[in-house]
Image (tube, rainbow, N blue to C red; front, top):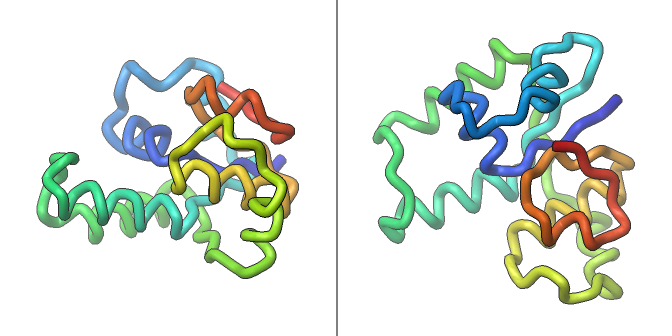
Length: 128
């Protein structure tokens, strides 16, 4: 199975946070699954960090890269085809980062790993 990690999932996974569900933790540790991290989430972290809305270690980009390698998490670039579902995507959710993650998961036929209840209103596979 192919899983796309929502931004909060990656942060909780890297922090070994109790916020991460047992089911998600089991999926993340199972080497049979393909795990993906979107450039959209990297952009979200960068924006929130630069606005002072998110506290991260100043070395977070290097830490993130190291942990992605250790945990076999692949990068998912943003392509034009990922934006196409947005043309008809209902406005259940206003967050532009989450909306793009939804579109990427739809186009790439991935399961979006998220706790966000608004995302579950879309026709996208989710797990938590």
